[in-house]
Image 1 (cartoon, one colour):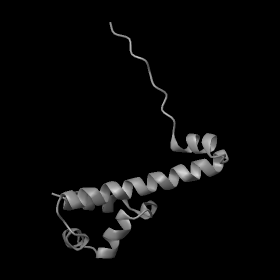
Image 2: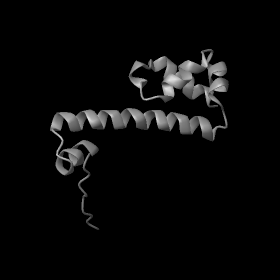
Image 3: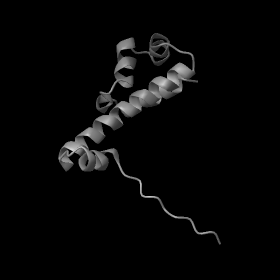
Length: 92
């Protein structure tokens, strides 16, 4: 049996608090903003990889282009589960 060493993975918030002197609360807020941006970036990449514009996705979803923009923005906390489902279905 081969033994492997588990690596400790540090979160962005922990690194920020340790290296940059942020308080734990400020570091957690930073982590949340990073996570928000990451989801939007993934959705945008998915759309671009599918060769679609926001307007085309909006038409497939039956919503406005600004709705698609909001889903890809870092304001995704306002996203409804149904909107995410419709967005992902529009990629097909």
